[in-house]
Image (cartoon, rainbow, N blue to C red; front, top):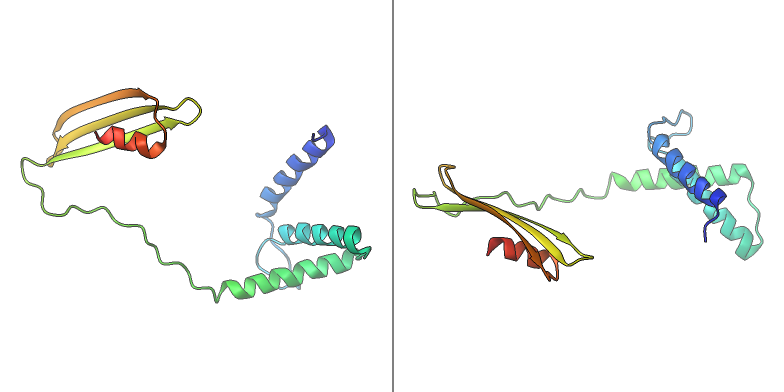
Length: 152
């Protein structure tokens, strides 16, 4: 069970982490990213060293370790290749004809109650609405099943 003081400390830590991203680390530290998470990590590591190895670190040693770790992390960020976007762009297989029907579907699923809400709009290739509808389905096992039911 988390005490009120521990809960408050967690909330304050989260707030501090969020606001620390807007702070600028001033020279001569030599880093450009947020140092706060690295200091927290250094505190965690020094705590573990104290508990498990009976080793005590000074404040300066903890901050120095945080700066060195941050610099190492920043240095490898430039050499890690950026992932190539694999997001497929939607495309039609061929030019739509006048009798082509386009289906737009949506499904929302409640895992706890195993219920899905389904909607759909059918239109021609010229954006003329042919039909639309919605449905509530019970006993739906997954979001994937809900999406399949919306297409049906």
